[in-house]
Length: 132
Ligand code: THU
Image 1 (cartoon, rainbow, N blue to C red):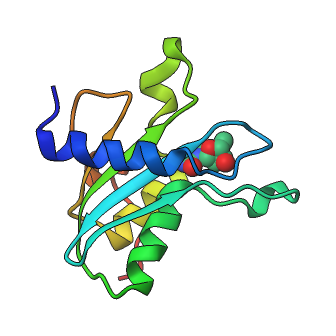
Image 2 (tube, protein in one colour):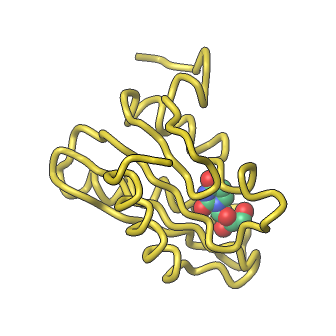
Protein backbone atom coordinates (compact mmCIF):
# COMPACT_ATOMS: atom_id res chain seq x y z
CA UNK A 1 0.00 0.00 0.00
CA UNK A 2 1.28 3.48 -0.91
CA UNK A 3 2.11 6.04 1.82
CA UNK A 4 -0.67 8.39 2.86
CA UNK A 5 0.95 11.41 1.13
CA UNK A 6 0.85 9.61 -2.22
CA UNK A 7 -2.71 8.40 -1.66
CA UNK A 8 -3.77 11.98 -0.93
CA UNK A 9 -2.02 13.26 -4.05
CA UNK A 10 -3.70 10.50 -6.11
CA UNK A 11 -7.06 11.64 -4.75
CA UNK A 12 -6.36 15.15 -6.08
CA UNK A 13 -5.37 13.66 -9.42
CA UNK A 14 -8.66 11.71 -9.49
CA UNK A 15 -10.65 14.90 -8.91
CA UNK A 16 -8.68 16.64 -11.68
CA UNK A 17 -9.37 13.71 -14.05
CA UNK A 18 -13.09 14.21 -13.60
CA UNK A 19 -12.68 17.59 -15.34
CA UNK A 20 -10.62 16.27 -18.27
CA UNK A 21 -11.52 17.37 -21.79
CA UNK A 22 -11.38 13.98 -23.52
CA UNK A 23 -14.41 13.72 -25.82
CA UNK A 24 -12.50 11.68 -28.44
CA UNK A 25 -10.65 9.01 -26.50
CA UNK A 26 -13.01 9.12 -23.51
CA UNK A 27 -9.89 8.30 -21.51
CA UNK A 28 -9.78 10.84 -18.71
CA UNK A 29 -6.48 11.43 -16.96
CA UNK A 30 -5.66 13.68 -14.03
CA UNK A 31 -2.31 14.60 -12.56
CA UNK A 32 -1.42 16.24 -9.25
CA UNK A 33 2.13 17.32 -8.50
CA UNK A 34 3.60 18.36 -5.21
CA UNK A 35 6.12 21.21 -5.53
CA UNK A 36 8.01 23.78 -3.48
CA UNK A 37 4.98 26.06 -3.99
CA UNK A 38 2.33 23.48 -3.12
CA UNK A 39 0.13 21.23 -5.22
CA UNK A 40 -0.78 21.86 -8.86
CA UNK A 41 -3.11 19.81 -11.02
CA UNK A 42 -3.72 19.14 -14.68
CA UNK A 43 -5.89 16.97 -16.90
CA UNK A 44 -5.70 15.87 -20.51
CA UNK A 45 -7.04 18.33 -23.07
CA UNK A 46 -7.85 16.84 -26.47
CA UNK A 47 -8.61 18.57 -29.74
CA UNK A 48 -10.36 17.98 -33.08
CA UNK A 49 -6.86 18.13 -34.54
CA UNK A 50 -5.72 15.10 -32.57
CA UNK A 51 -1.94 15.65 -32.44
CA UNK A 52 -2.33 18.96 -30.64
CA UNK A 53 -3.98 17.46 -27.58
CA UNK A 54 -1.93 17.43 -24.40
CA UNK A 55 -1.52 14.99 -21.53
CA UNK A 56 -2.53 15.65 -17.93
CA UNK A 57 1.04 15.44 -16.66
CA UNK A 58 2.37 18.20 -18.92
CA UNK A 59 -0.58 20.46 -18.11
CA UNK A 60 0.14 20.04 -14.39
CA UNK A 61 3.86 20.74 -14.85
CA UNK A 62 3.19 23.78 -17.06
CA UNK A 63 0.73 25.09 -14.44
CA UNK A 64 3.36 24.81 -11.74
CA UNK A 65 6.08 26.48 -13.81
CA UNK A 66 3.83 29.39 -14.70
CA UNK A 67 3.13 29.90 -10.98
CA UNK A 68 6.86 29.99 -10.27
CA UNK A 69 7.46 26.53 -8.82
CA UNK A 70 10.96 25.22 -9.31
CA UNK A 71 11.09 21.86 -7.53
CA UNK A 72 8.70 18.99 -8.25
CA UNK A 73 8.83 16.39 -5.48
CA UNK A 74 6.00 14.02 -6.36
CA UNK A 75 3.81 13.28 -9.37
CA UNK A 76 0.52 11.38 -9.04
CA UNK A 77 -1.34 10.20 -12.14
CA UNK A 78 -4.91 8.94 -12.10
CA UNK A 79 -6.56 7.40 -15.17
CA UNK A 80 -10.28 7.28 -14.48
CA UNK A 81 -11.10 5.14 -17.48
CA UNK A 82 -8.30 2.58 -17.42
CA UNK A 83 -9.78 -0.84 -17.99
CA UNK A 84 -9.63 -3.20 -15.04
CA UNK A 85 -7.61 -5.87 -16.85
CA UNK A 86 -4.90 -3.51 -18.07
CA UNK A 87 -4.96 -1.06 -15.19
CA UNK A 88 -1.28 -1.18 -14.34
CA UNK A 89 -0.22 -0.52 -17.93
CA UNK A 90 -2.88 2.00 -18.84
CA UNK A 91 -2.01 4.24 -15.93
CA UNK A 92 1.69 4.60 -16.71
CA UNK A 93 2.82 7.94 -18.20
CA UNK A 94 3.51 8.21 -21.94
CA UNK A 95 6.98 8.67 -23.40
CA UNK A 96 6.59 12.40 -24.06
CA UNK A 97 5.65 13.00 -20.43
CA UNK A 98 8.58 10.91 -19.24
CA UNK A 99 10.88 13.17 -21.24
CA UNK A 100 9.31 16.20 -19.49
CA UNK A 101 9.81 14.52 -16.11
CA UNK A 102 13.42 13.84 -16.97
CA UNK A 103 14.17 17.51 -17.65
CA UNK A 104 11.74 19.34 -15.36
CA UNK A 105 11.23 16.94 -12.44
CA UNK A 106 14.34 14.73 -12.42
CA UNK A 107 14.13 13.93 -8.70
CA UNK A 108 10.38 13.40 -8.50
CA UNK A 109 8.73 10.24 -7.26
CA UNK A 110 5.95 9.02 -9.53
CA UNK A 111 2.83 7.07 -8.53
CA UNK A 112 -0.26 6.02 -10.45
CA UNK A 113 -3.64 4.58 -9.53
CA UNK A 114 -2.71 1.34 -11.30
CA UNK A 115 0.43 0.62 -9.37
CA UNK A 116 1.15 -0.04 -5.73
CA UNK A 117 4.73 1.19 -6.01
CA UNK A 118 6.69 4.40 -6.32
CA UNK A 119 8.80 4.93 -9.44
CA UNK A 120 11.83 7.17 -9.89
CA UNK A 121 12.11 9.19 -13.08
CA UNK A 122 15.33 7.37 -13.97
CA UNK A 123 13.46 4.07 -13.84
CA UNK A 124 10.76 5.38 -16.15
CA UNK A 125 13.22 6.85 -18.67
CA UNK A 126 16.71 5.40 -18.40
CA UNK A 127 19.49 7.00 -20.46
CA UNK A 128 17.31 10.00 -21.26
CA UNK A 129 18.16 12.46 -24.01
CA UNK A 130 19.46 15.74 -22.59
CA UNK A 131 21.20 18.85 -23.90
CA UNK A 132 21.92 20.21 -20.42
N1 THU B 1 -2.87 10.70 -21.76
C1 THU B 1 -2.45 11.44 -20.67
O1 THU B 1 -3.09 12.43 -20.30
N2 THU B 1 -1.30 11.06 -20.06
C2 THU B 1 -0.53 10.00 -20.43
O2 THU B 1 0.54 9.80 -19.87
C3 THU B 1 -1.00 9.09 -21.47
C4 THU B 1 -2.16 9.55 -22.26
C5 THU B 1 -4.09 11.12 -22.46
C6 THU B 1 -3.83 11.64 -23.85
C7 THU B 1 -5.17 11.41 -24.52
O3 THU B 1 -6.00 12.53 -24.27
C8 THU B 1 -5.74 10.20 -23.80
O4 THU B 1 -4.96 10.03 -22.62
C9 THU B 1 -5.70 8.91 -24.61
O5 THU B 1 -4.46 8.69 -25.12
